[in-house]
Each structure stands twice: as structure tokens, then as C-alpha cells.
Image (tube, rainbow, N blue to C red):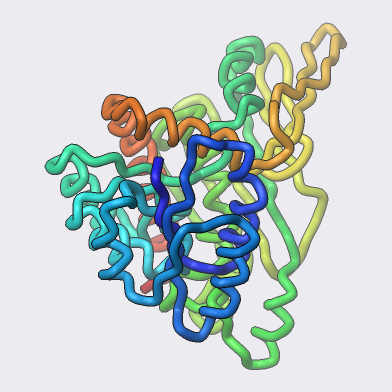
Length: 325
């Protein structure tokens, strides 16, 4: 994979600390705003990135780049991904891939019509611990109740209350608790159970953005509650309760650092199969394989999953009368 990275924010800085452990990924280019050029050049020197650009068209014209990693604010995901696909580049896009299902359908059709890889960078789907949860789920018997809580008080919330609206709380930029934190919970649940039959979102709304909320997903035999909060916090964990046992995820659904599995007979076990300490390692190792092998069957499967998640997001936003973008 010859990668062109878009952005110089926290997610890119975090990604660059890990990517050296994947030597087959060639850091071919980095896109920066003119304002952040000095920062970009510092990252270039530190991590051996071949070129820095401030013009997206020039980066896309670079024939040494075959894949674009979109790590920009949520509201830019659709347009920058579309431009990359139109120029024949594979795309890895940070979560959420788009702000609504219509945008995602358009990008999916464009990618598949050009036989290009398009995948959403959503860490939990690729973690070994998540795969272990999927594998062990039948041991819980009939799954009855799932509760996911990813609540993290945001330092930006204090600024928001004081009148400064940063991207994390800006509805025009696709901010809010649903898209930032609860989206991981949605991916976690939909990856296990598929599309729900009904969705309701009870949100705490301030200035047209959800600062926290409770998402309810209804399945024929399972009831799901997903909590995401940026204005308050509590112990971060998830529980899955079945007729024959339970699981407790020890930590957020974007890292799944470990989980406890307990049977009704009292036997308990702590499980941790994650091979690398960085949450992004597993997904990018798989993305590199998919792009190298041009595994379009994998791409179609993951896009179907992303579509199911975005359908939940659409229903949740409509339920809470929220509009993003």
C-alpha cells in the first residue's frame, strides 16, 4: 500500500506512532492546510513521509500513491473520498464514513463501478478480541440484553458551554456524541447482531447538537441500549447477557482491551487475544492485505456492514430531530 494521508490532527499523529510496525505500508504523501504546514513537515521528518502537499489535486495526481487515508473532520469525509475515487485511488476513510446513508450509497456505487477498495476505518471490527466475542457469543445461550457505555467527559464541552463551538460539538461538521463515541457502540452491536428492527435515540441536545444520549436498538429477541456521552462520564464497559452466561467488555468498544466471560455454572475467564497494543494495528494490517490482494469480496462485506450502521445513524438522528452537515 502506497499511502496518501489527509490531515495532521490527533488521529493522524496517533496512526503514525503505529504504522512503523507495518513495514509494507509506504508513507508516500501527507496533505496539510497551509496553516499546518510546519506541523506537517515535522511529521514528515519524524516518520519518513516522502512528500507533503497543501493542494489535494496535486496529491491525487501523484502516481506513487495508490491509496488515500481520509482522516479529516467528519463533514469532509464524503467529498474527499469521492474525489479520491474519481481519480482512481483506493480509500480508507475514518469513521463515520459519511454523515448519512445516501452519501454512503453513492460512494459505494462509485467505488464498485471502478473496482476500487473503499473501507471504513472502524477499529473494533478488526480487533482479535472482537472476533473472539463473535466466536464465543453462542456460549451465552439466547442473547437477551446488551448494554454499551462509552462516556468520556470532553474538555471541549467546557468551551462549548462558554460559547466556543469546536468541531466536536458543531452540527455542521458532523459532531456530537452519537457520531464521536456512540458510533463505536453501534458498530460493535451491528457487527454481532446485524440490522435492528427499530431504533430510538433519546438525546440531551444543546444548541442543536447531542452532547450525550441513549440509543435503543430493538431486535426480535434482544434488547440493546447504547450510551454515548461527552458531557458526563462513568465507568466505560459493555455487557452482553444471555440465558447461559454473560460477557463484560473491560473498556471502550473502540479498543476492547479484554473481556470477562462467565457461565451460569459460575466458571469465569478473562480473555485477551489482542496482539498489538495499538488499536489501529489490526485494521491497517488487514487493509494492507485487502489492497495488496485486491480482495473485493471483503470490501463488499464490510460496506454492507457500514450501510447497516449508517441506516441506524439515520434513524437515530431522525428520532432525536437532529440534522448534521
